[in-house]
Length: 232
Ligand code: DX5
Ligand code: ZN
Image (cartoon, rainbow, N blue to C red; front, top):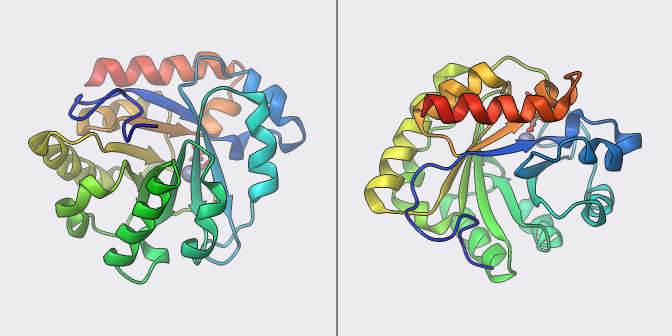
């Protein structure tokens, strides 16, 4: 696997829509995944009730999804001690852990290197109030940066536009340095907020309730993509 799911470094801003199965019906995951054929990625939210005040599912459920799709499976670890657990997810396409869950930026870079060595893309995530400035000189060490636009832990929250300043700073540095690092946004994304995020420079749009809560989930995916493309 290359370090870029989009074909090489410096491709400029992408538009990838990633429905979050957190908002799907856990008893009918295969059915709900089949309901979003237009999705580019599928986003898998792992929560441990320690790092975030909620419990979703872990490796057994994430693994159960794998045979039901050929899409890029994007794991978002909202867990404490990712150094211990992240390697278990190495056969997913991307694995993102939280900067706040490791002791230092050096530890984050080391874990990302381990994930890459095990064959998956490595992502780093930041909560809404965590600055990205310390990451800017080290973006080549990460395949994606996931900017949370709500406090992690629950779907269905309201988008926080103030995080878009961080997206702009990341976009500027990624473009300046010709990097392949993707910028992902997660929380409160629908067509309208995807447009705001696109204008700031986002590549990957995670959307839970606006997709699986819609009467036509696949149409919702297409609307997010269209709104993002138009706003770039
Ligand atoms: C929240 C999760 C999100 C969640 C987004 O902590 O990381 O991926 O599924 O849900 P919506 O799109 O409903 O805000
Ligand atoms: Zn997520």
